Image (tube, rainbow, N blue to C red; front, side, top):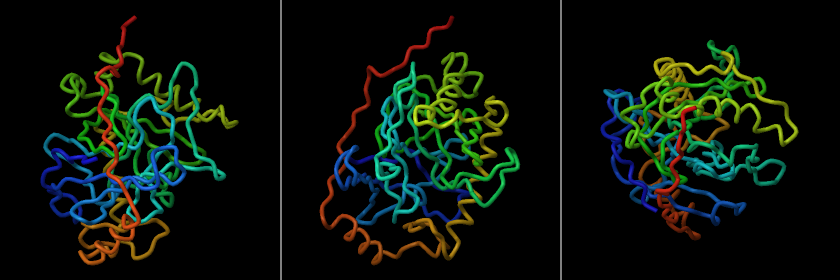
Length: 310
């Protein structure tokens, strides 16, 4: 499956990232979603690339648009995520105690109620206390909840507008959830803020808070809690949160040693940036035993949600 990174453009102002406009191919290894060995890698011109480190955070500085890597299509249940500990950070099926993880269906919801993904080149540092929430980060890239009308494919990359952010408290950690909409969504021109979201998609923010509060309860865990009482912060605040997480990623990718996988193909100044020869060897090591381009997942024209005002 060839996912074109449409609209990435030149990376003005980004930390040490070379111009990145070539198409990226999503390469599936180990079988489809549901197979224990499922991995979705990213490759470009015979070199593996990291969806965490090599895809730029900012898509367009002038319009405050970001790139989102989709991990979980809306209305599905498999807990897929960018693997921060595997070389080149493929999307993998998360496990717990040797079992594949699936989110429970908590009435009236079916699976994830947004396209769920991550902002590349961000990191919620578990060693740093977030001054906004007084909790440390959760050790992952920032999560994105894309609320548009289309169901996005696993591994697809989209330009999004940030609308706001919610601060989930997961145990003792901060787990920011950024609300966003694809820039090419039919309603994108109408929705720029959390307030707009409530006008055009009434009830979705409340449903989002309810979903995250309850989603672990079927597994025997207590309800999650929120900073700020579960009230979303605006888009300016959200962009500041993203900026902090980008600064944390900069420090991480420059560190000489880490427990996380920092291999990349484009971050200048990073000791983990691979040369062309090493990248070619890595490509052969990852895909030499067999891989297939990820099957094309057509966007479902009938998947649009209809919001009815009361």
